[in-house]
View 1 (cartoon, one colour):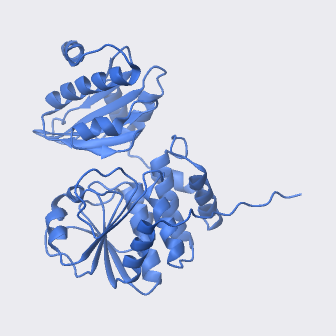
View 2 (view 1 turned 90 degrees about the horizontal axis):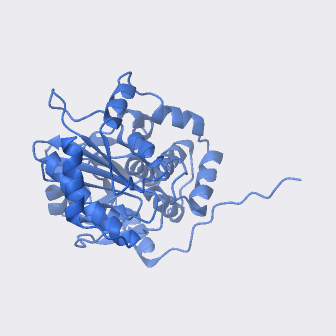
View 3 (view 1 turned 180 degrees about the vertical axis):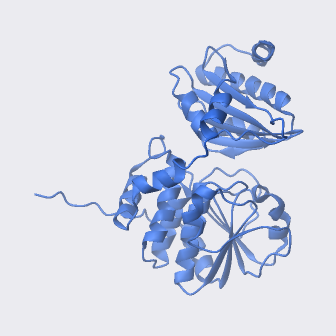
Length: 356
């Protein structure tokens, strides 16, 4: 006797969601954009929504501040993806920012997008604490990925799920849930994932495309990064700092893989990678596996994200950013665990590590 199949039923639409649907439905030419260095959730959400709109006879295209990584090629070929060249923005009547609510995260596109005489819409699952610069916003911080919100919207726009759209949405899910192993993986995520499988997604092939086509240098760069691991607060905080190489380029080490390895250490509660990306510019990637809220930490440095995964771009040299981050992390951890620790003790520990 076969078990009845559970179909995905989206939650009841909120007013914000219905307003977003109306903005999309009433627009003719839609510009989709996202944050710098777009990841799988950003790109997959853009590709899926573009397919939904184009299937309705509307015109939708993507304009991002940075080029996508090559591994996302089978997602970006699903729609028209453009990379900003600093010139005039193509004609449009609606801008949709996906996987981010802070317009500054579109980098050098921000000023031109803000000045464009078009309506603005945000679709995102991150906490937003800045100015509301948009005409409409569908933000749900309980969603595991922005792709979940796109799937909800797709139903209201009468979309028929095809293999391409399914691949795009499945990519969003596996990116932001770490292949369904992070704590944000919930029932809705799994039901959408099952729906995407029925629409033609092959998880093994997708995993191979995204994670098993690395260059030969990949293991060596990852090993070199891991040798720079330092521990603080009795091992609860793990930090890797990655300076620019002799050629002036940022480390090629895969930060997500390195962070997962750090979190595999039993006593580690928060893992940080601080990567030098310029003379006085440092990129933070932060992950946690306990009660430590890395979004709160990243927010102190002008960034954002989620409780378990966050990031920031810090306008400081690597050594200064690293010291300040360790101080802040030790202080926050002390509050989380009701420990007695001070920023000064963190700074002293950091200096000892740097001098070792």
